[in-house]
Amino acid sequence: MMCFYCTAFGQWVVSDPALTQLSQITWAKELKQAYEQFQVLGESRDILTKSLDLYRQVNGGIKNSKMVLQVLSMQGEMLELAAKECTRSDVFTGQEAYGEYTNVLNKIMEESVLSFDLIRTIISPSVSMTDGERIKIIVDLDNKLKENRDKMLDERARFNTVNDAIKRIAALKSTAKK
Image (cartoon, rainbow, N blue to C red):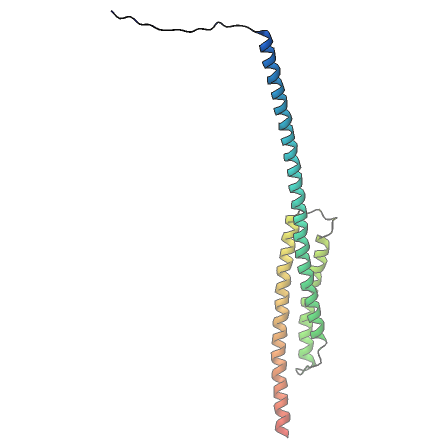
């Protein structure tokens, strides 16, 4: 025969109203603190979101400013080049060829002036556009101005080639007469 010995412990459920009340108060305080911390975190998130939005606006403004400055600078360089080319004193090609050359330069500059007017309109605060839309238009204008500048430089190179060739021929003719 086998006999087992087992020790059993038991606890009677005791209802302690004071302890129950104390644990409920503690739990309520902890819940209230957690809620307040959650509100602070929510407010912090909102502040960070607003700060990020402001940063994006400022960042967009800075990008626009740099790009606009680049476009305006390029327009100034083109205007200076056109002014020099239209007042040259070393022209050997004849007035008709030189007139055609200056007409081409003037047409290129007219396109650039339209770009300048468009830039001025775009950066105006009265125009309701997003930074992305403004940047896209400014980038397109920048590319168009680069094309126009390249056209202008190509035309100058062509004219200089012809002008220099005629100058050399004239110099050869004058030395041959001597």
